[in-house]
Image (cartoon, rainbow, N blue to C red; front, side, top):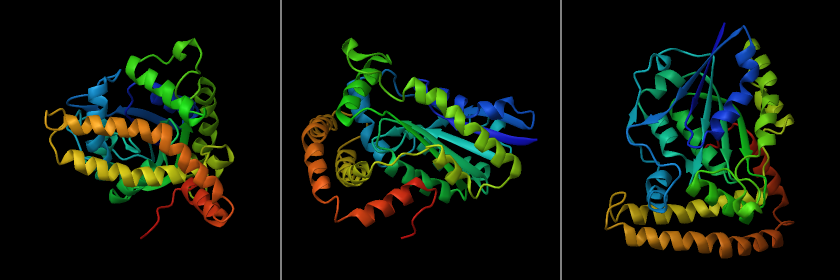
Length: 309
């Protein structure tokens, strides 16, 4: 009997739906004992979000500062597993605070050490650098990343910005104004994520994980858009400067921090609606000269490898 654990944190429930579809084949197998563990916080973040809470979470999210967790004495975390599936959200180009906090907690290392890990994320579109940060956290826990599945909103960048804000601030995964598409990962993609289950089950039962990511890629588990790699990297540099600056001004929700949070919120709107299109034009102008690098980056970010500096 193979033991599998799904560790997740979700606000809307979308990530849990994705995880359940991916693991349906494992759930149905008599050879697999499948368990779920939900990461829980001592003080949870609101959903729907309000504007103040959303922007005040930025510095701590990007700087990967932990928060207090509860339910860490759960017996489900005490055993060893043949496979762990880590399902996480991307906040501000980084792993969400709950997932980051779990991976940095003392409970993580004995649980994850020498264990095959498959990461699953459901995001708007920019997840690549968040995955790199997850790779580092898993490496720090001596875990063995063997697979990655990234499901994203397939609509163009500015459309998805409008729809995701509607979802986050209302809690409704509905068509904004009755005109825009539904936000988040499409119902079709969520349902079809069950296609990864048979591959994972076969690999699990054979205990041969070396080629798992290639098999997942054959089923389009990851789709890399070169422009988003460029955007993700550049935004990480700028977010780092903003995060450290705001963090130095005060604690979350403190009066001292609020003027700088306001400035960041204005910057974010400008970056999305004005700077991003300019960066895209520059990307097109350098498309041919950087062909080899683009191919190399696409191959690397599709993989489960971690670059060594």
